[in-house]
Length: 608
Image 1 (tube, rainbow, N blue to C red):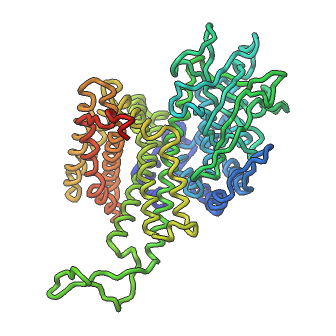
Image 2 (tube, rainbow, N blue to C red):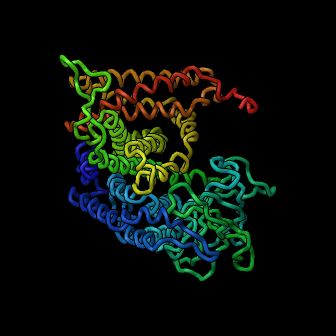
Image 3 (cartoon, rainbow, N blue to C red):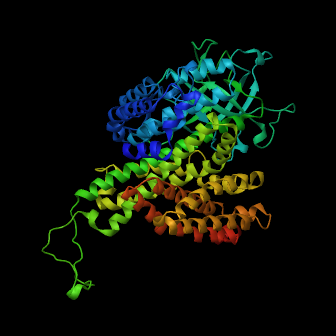
């Protein structure tokens, strides 16, 4: 994997030029390599050996505390001590000021070694980064700083039992805590009451405190909350109350674990139902969890998207690494598993169509069979292509924050369009990669004697959390490609066409350039056709096939660009595979989009 990372970072994305920017001036190619070396070592020593352990020894609650294997505590401590929680932050908060693309590449080792143990850090970083962007100075100094140091960990509390992806329906309420609620040094102080479901890392004792970021609604003058998402505000709700200097006060906040969710995979990360303000831990003589508002009232969802978008790219990267872990395991197996014999040729060189195998010949490694090569090529195309997508998006983040004004604006626009793809495409197709890994191992792959079944189970969550597949499709077709007159889609098309023009001048790639140009044209035409009636219901009924087609066009573009940058025969073979076996799928997907096929929205409940 390191060889692939080095190619993507150095030869394709050109990260060696980043230290020329003021933000990264203290770095060099050597420091970038040092960070990758360190993270690779920690992942190999503290995470990978215990991935199966945290899967089989699930978190359990004894009525007082949640128990996790000691390995989880040790791994999280090693990660925090590496400084990676604050890797991209400024030196003033103990950060390394690393480029986002290097931080993402370094985190790839942890996701591959144990996605579940790596989840605690991903959530904590996203939580603290949000507070650095939207919190008050005191909130940054007390909460974010202690998260970056690893003293506290963090969560995001969005979903509720009755409202998963439909955040406009959240029922958690926040009321001002006394007449002096606005004078608290940690921010305007409220009492929260409600329930939050599916909260990853919501309860544990890895750290001395947990910082929950909670979405809730503040009632208006009439005592009723504003309807829809405009009424949502964001609050910091710590598990244990702290003072303005970040010291624990000894008071437990009114946040109670109602239960642990027992999952198909991702078992090493606690997943919880939390009750806020039920009175189990009354604070200062009253029920209601103490929370400190972040940002202005009604701006909670806007603030939370800072963490959600970061998490979506992180989920995509995690999906990629699970796909690559399965690929490497099945590749090793295919090279050593002896089974079957190759077809022989008949008289005068004609292929034998029946019984054309020499039963006296020794069996061959299964990697010599064309169908096994097909499954391995698919995994390579999905995994390495997905890794390129994640790192490309991370490189856009660096451009957004440190590039010249025009380049930064373009990066922001491209990220808007690509974030749904960065989250959803690896989640779907690296799940398929994990399924193919099981298939290559056959019956062995279905047992717990090999790791590929766990990779599939861990992977299956990624199409659901941080915005389901359907939500990503609605976001892409309903908002991202039509906003500002389609500016984002046009800019992406410009980038794709630049690759097409380069490929058209290189003889081995001219045909691929033509095929990609055709796919891009079909995507644009289907986008227009979807909205031709002007009816959102008709346009968005097939948003998920649109998402799938859009992702495949993006990945075809990236694979062609990668092949132009590399003479590696394996990489070029993966590009050939993607164009031959994957890109043609878009015709069926875009067909229902362009025709606004109505069967799904017209289907009646009773017809099922």
